[in-house]
Length: 116
Image (cartoon, rainbow, N blue to C red; front, top):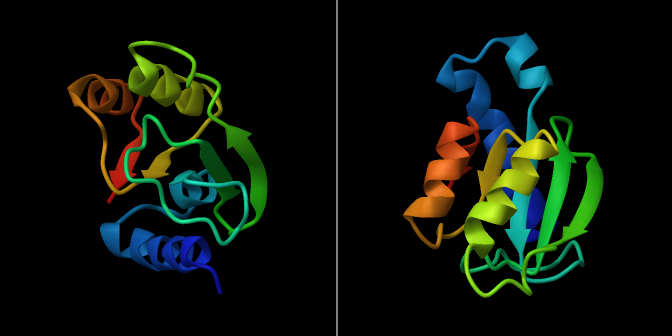
C-alpha cells in the first residue's frame, strides 16, 4: 500500500471520531499534495507548489490526478491552488506544510480542512 493510500485510510478512520455525520462524510473529497503523478509519489513538502494533487472520494477511489496549473505564476501560487481545489469541491487537503498565510486564509475561507 502506498504512503498516499495509508494516509487516506487513516483520515477515513478518524473522520467519524470527529463527530461528523454520515451525510457530511459521504460528501468529502480529499486532495493530497504530491511530488509526482504516480500512486507511490511522496507527499509534497509545500502544498502550494506541489506539482500534483491526487483527488479522492470518501471511499478512497481516485477521481483525478491534477497537475498544479499555477506553477508558472511568479507570486500567489498557493492561494490560486487553494481556490482551484475548493472550486473542484475538495473538502480536505493533506499536506506536509502550507507555504504561507494567504493559502491558509483561502483554505479556511472556503471551508477546506487541512491534515498535516
